[in-house]
Amino acid sequence: MLQMMISKRIGRRQFHFTVQGNNFHETVAEYDRLSFPDVPNCGLCGSDNLDLTSRVAQDKFKYTSVKCIDCRADLTFGKTQKDDQTVFLRRREGGEFDWKALDKSER
Ligand SMILES: [Zn+2]
Image (cartoon, rainbow, N blue to C red):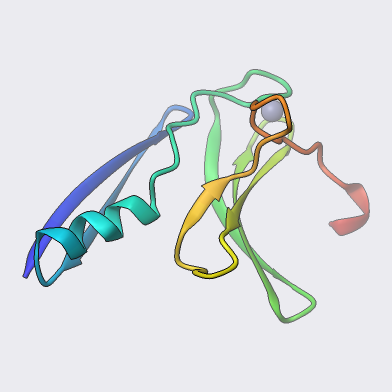
């Protein structure tokens, strides 16, 4: 069993994840599934007061996202269709992160 520790910086916070596999290949494959980049600050207000959050909508849709504590904007993690363990950060067509302003109807 091999383990690998990954650090991600989300705003001013640092998050540590440990992935593991039976061999080097499996361990790196697990690491690949979390290959989203660090997120230095909010794409809307520029704050570095960010956190990770998860929620379940309509009892079935699970969302994980980076949330801005200051303006409550939200950057959602997407999953690939064939493998819901592989996550990436949603981007717009131009390549920048797809930050969404708080939808007040969802509160
Ligand atoms: Zn913000």
